[in-house]
Length: 177
Figure 1 (tube, rainbow, N blue to C red):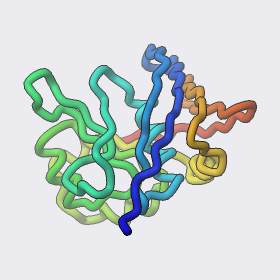
Figure 2: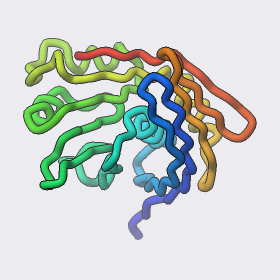
Figure 3: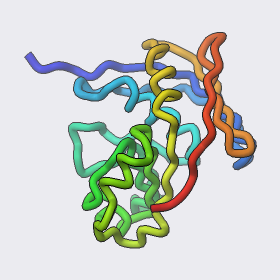
Figure 4: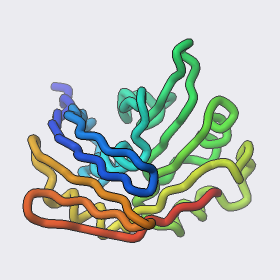
């Protein structure tokens, strides 16, 4: 029997002082059977950090030609490709020819650097990278519940997420490939 996705309902309050974005969103996030809780949490944090009108979750790990998050313009043209974790250099090379690319990395800077080292990537200097502290993401994953509320706040390069009565924080590592 095939395993099915687990659905999470996350009320996400975004207070992004750095970008001037303030929203409260009711998200339904599907977790693929092979996806770890840390990757799911990194996707949700990435969604909050990059939120813009039209940002959507991709169909998941089972659809390898789609990113974790993406936006399209009114004509259906892909405008923003967001990968989570340590995507292959080939994947980023192809994606950067189609749209603006962001990587939300929760596996450590070294892992991403090893994957990209010496590889050809189209407009590598334009690929935005958001590094999340793996311990921060692990703390969120430990408290992940099927129905939950998160308050995500970014202010002066610092990120905090409040889950219930606990608050977790980390400095945001922002850069490019």
